[in-house]
Length: 472
Picture: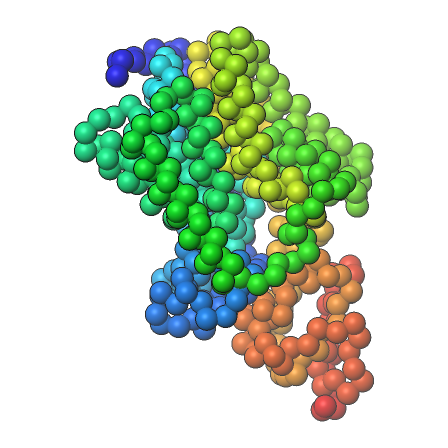
């Protein structure tokens, strides 16, 4: 393989390091996020799980999602090793995010060397730190239940890195790399079902790099990956039940909505800003979108304009196919759409962007624009109260701390007038934090007259616990 030397601009490494520190400081406050929403569902499940860890991989009852590695095993660690500590769980999530971003940097290094680009190491470093600082990662770092996304990124990036590197390697190292490809795919599938698309992404990377695909080793590896995907599909069908309506796929106006959402995620626009367009202050929402999207789009456009003619037509095609297929199922979602769904789709475009940026004389300005965009998106999301997701989490924690010092008894009737606000607590959260049996907690539209204890949660978030001497 041709030896490639690193000759970036003198200021490249210092500004990359500074951006990395800035990104880390941006994510550190996530450690203070309390458990919320599905976190309590998984905490209870992990606490009641069989002592046999293999039961998570072969469940006896159908599940909503079969993710034994990123959900069942992850929450066993939180429950058994981290003593159900929210800060510790979020610290693990931050560590997973750093590992995933490092794996993306490794993929960028492999791609740069395969394409014979100059400056492969600083290009890889730039890819990793910028990827780690994108605002689309806000929920996986503030929501313990979303750890599956960081694990998906980690194993997918390792899979693609080994796939690209294997074509540039010989002997036993090549064999080890090819063997690791289906293994990392299996780990990705056990983390999140969207990893089923990885075989296509492998082909798109070979199209981008121009490496040969039809050699014996590659064909055997692809065949092994396809077999693993088929086995996973069979097992997933066996172990899962029907999903919520919000996760069904359809063709309709949702395709336009999800396409616009994808464009927003790429532009660093926070999900909460899009929600505010529909339900909140439109002037504030538009201002927030502009403050995040304009710097990000400018930072993306400055270097790419200079490189637009350097890529081959097949590379532009590979970029389009990679991003379109990686986000493919999410274009069809009937309702739910979160920014972190685009985390895989942006990897290849970001590698190209880093290649175009590493020698750009305005690299410090470009990174300053991205940092400003991400900080505004992340800090703004943290600042929002309900109906913002993190605001709901703080509200739920405040209420639970108040209820923990009261004398709670069962049956507990819960009268709530806001489905979305109550989701931050849920029956699972009340049961876990108040040490009550979940089957003795009843959520109702109106507390029955014979209720001995009723928790009333108003639409504005105020709550009151009413206790009488009556018994059911």
